[in-house]
Image 1 (cartoon, rainbow, N blue to C red):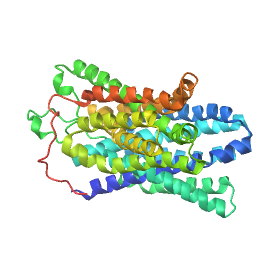
Image 2: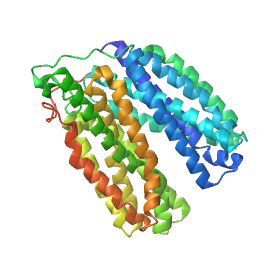
Image 3: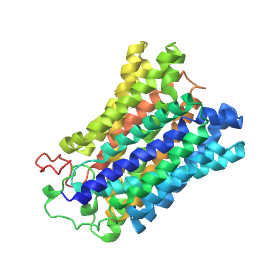
Image 4: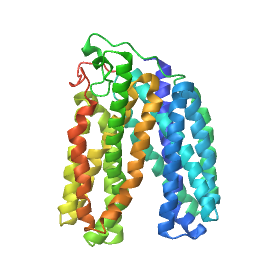
Length: 414
């Protein structure tokens, strides 16, 4: 293996950790920001929507720019902007100031998010085997780092501003220092191989071979990307709902103490991380379509157990299955979008990630609205339906020659 490719993979891990750390640094300080600005929970919820809108806009800008300028330019630029913008929510003293700060921070975070995912697609393509899920697993590591830093700062009696400023400054340095290891530009599209067995990725290649003309290829590829985006919306809506409602489910529905209820989200998040650490090997063995289909089916079983199970152990088991099942779905959708057309990987990933982010934001709100009609646990049946739909539609990842896994590939370094 070329040392530059190994370095590019390590740098991609670094940027995923960086993105998770910077976002986590804001998340752990949300209560302090709410108290400082003096807004209600409802108003804060509206302000958080601006964070998502900013991220969506940043994704749509950074995706095409990554295709045009290359990851070596856009990824570190996104990291620098995100690190610099982190301090803004910490400095905000009024609701309007916090609104502007969250919009700016969300935009910068979206730029980093989509550009690093586009670069991850190219690293995966260069490796010739699945590595995307491992990148997504390290994003969670960043959240742990942010929580540890925030806890240490609180014990030292520091306000949120110094810790956010320090993390932002360190993030800028890391973003700049890691830039040289990135792949400079997107690789040129590869001509279709007449031998279908030569394609090492069993579930995330484009449908170009199925089309007969360049125009048909573009139209077919674009339709497929938007189908992937819809699937991303559904599975990320499920993830967003779990983030906000898992602990409340145990507390309000099953009567668990607050300390015990908090472990519901911890169980879900831990299962997500473990699943993503294992998913690349499963994709290499069985194919990305199988991981998406069986993962979504497992998630459907898990959330149904949560919705209908009357016992606390059933709820914990359900949240674990839900997290484990969802863990490999989003990376496969991002990877498939990027591989659909390597020359437009950034734009395609931005479409899938952007619509998925809308689902992540909508999940808590949709479940909250449904609780006006049915009990919270019964509202989770919607998530079951979305997971079942995803499992049925997993054939979107199937292409003409990649429906079977490849087990005879020579390993490509670690």
